[in-house]
Amino acid sequence: MAEKQWAGTTWGGGKMHLWLIRLLRLTDVRLIYAFASAFVVPVCLCIRAEGRRAIYHYFRERLGYTPLKAAWKTYINHCMFGQAVVDKFAMYAGKRFNIDIEGYDHFQKLAKQRDSFVQLSSHVGNYEIAGYTLKAEDKPFNALVFSGEKASVMDNRNRMFADKNIRMIAVKSDMSHLFDINRALQDGETVSMPADRIWGSQKFVEMEFLGRKAHFPMGPFSVATMRARQVLAVNVMKTSAKSYKIYVAPLHYDNQAPRREQIRQLARSYADELERVVRLHPTQWYNYYDFWKPSPPLIPPAGGKATGRRACSGIDPNAQEASPTGGGLVGAPTEAYLRTIDIHELLPQQEPFVMVGSMTHFDRARTVTETTIGNGNMFVENGHMSPSGLIENIAQTCAARIGYVNKYILKKGIQIGFIGAIRNMEIKALPAVGETIQTTIDVVEEVFGMTLVHATVGCDTQTLVTAEMKIAVKSPQAPLSSQAPLSSPLGGKSQLAESLSPQGESEGAFLSPQGESEGALIKDEPCN
Image (tube, rainbow, N blue to C red; front, top):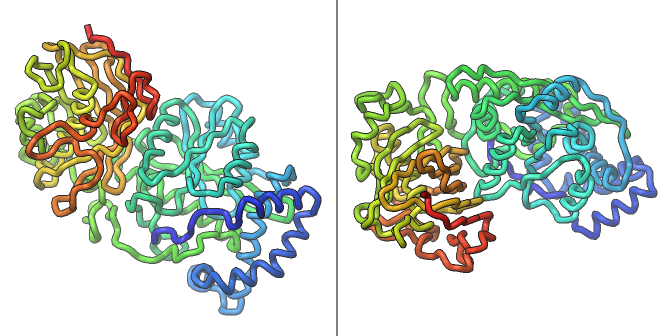
């Protein structure tokens, strides 16, 4: 699938939206449908040639319609899309539609369970209608939405969803919304996201869809399989002027299979259900770009090799972990083997700027380092490691992970990392000189050259620090980024650590005495 070519926002401005809502309070929606079909749709067909061609080719090539039928259905498709937009504003105006639900028992079953689950949608029909119908009183519902949507639309959504236990997670260009998704899944909540368009990350799964290979974004399937969550496909299709039908279908995959195969199985199940619904309602396909435009695959078929460019993240999705002896690629390394590795081989930093001692655990999802706080450490203040030192320790644990992958899996040189952001950092206590800390980073997601991690620093059984961090990796040929580097190859404190100010006002400075910036909270207490 090609990257989406749609701007992602509802057409029109706030005043027009307000006028439409007021009009719909007094007018039958069918009158608005007729006006749009007669005067608005023809204009859109003339000025939006790319979208018109994409839909025409969808009917001709994917569904096999004759040229005349495909042209007529292209017009009907645009009319149906206009009706979907009008219906959204009709809901804001207080109107209601008749709803029929197929497979509601699947939703009710998962809503009653303690565990979280994932709900995948598509750009067909009118998915927003589901938000007013499918709801669980005791399980919060988190919907992933485009952050660039018009303020008037977002305000109305917030108003409509206020008493329905629904929250919206805005898609952000820095991919930090993945932290919110991860937190919702950890807390046993429902997460809903579209799974038919590639956003941000360019990783995809190639699947047969309507008779031709198409690319579906890896992210939604990766999120669900990472936590072995159950998944539903939900599509809401218009059946008459005032009626909709919601199709709820469970999606299946083997959570005991290798991770890559889990993703492929889930994507296959999603594509099959989407094709079923589209064939039932062919005029409600709303991807106005070349959905089947080819591009090099990033996930090859099982047992094969990638034929296109490699994934943008720090780890090749097809690489295996190093063996316990470092001689092959057969399994996760043992702690004893990891402790024999000189940490300096994995880091761009050199003494006296190395803030981690040794690696004790590595797998695709988690890395752990162990560090004893020395009295000569440049970040020691008043007998304790400073907050700046703890940040550097977390960042260098991320760097050690990337270094291990490059050296022992990808057989590449060391890359320089940059701290892109720190969120929700809480420092409960500071470790003292002579104490040994364990730093654990759990990978939330790796997307578009960035790694998002949840970090925990502990001392014995006490948790000292929790934080979320985004790390970007600089390619060897790329120019230095303006983001804060972990440390330069020649050493030196990170720009992030240097920029920590009492007010926490700079881009990298998230630590203030009040802990008000980016959710950071410091409780300046010694570990002991």
